[in-house]
Length: 231
Image 1 (cartoon, rainbow, N blue to C red):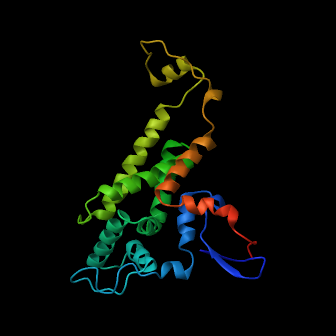
Image 2: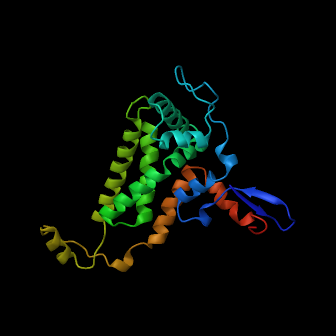
């Protein structure tokens, strides 16, 4: 959440938008930057399940639990399960789950980028999509839930990187074949590099689709209506 002062001197609180950041992960992280955004109660005290003593769960507490190394296993497992289940029915819960995973998603993006050298924002989009799809299908009662989420996301994004690399056009198809160690049996048409879609256009479409999926489109549309200037 951002606070700024309007032309009339009134303090206004607004959500961050994609236009102000370089990626959706930045938007998600900024959306929980204020104390008020982290204090909304997700689960009331004692409602995580039998034998799981904990205070009321807020986004801030949930994030501390799933990122912490010293949290008792029953509590951590209960919070993981509740976050994943909630993300299947609520865009808000989906954002909380993503926020708790922002460091892991950034690290996975860097790891894949170092291995494949594809466009970093393309990889980040694939990582986000892979995470959302994995969270939708994973067994929430699996004791290895965090590991399942990570490796399901990794596999999806890795396959996307491989496909993108295989589909890259080149000017000299014969030279490319020699590097691959084989000669195609059929005639191949050379695709000029200048005929490729603009990378920013492709990435904009991917980011736009993910923004729609997470309910961020309204924040983007409202950006131009924001009054005043940042104090």
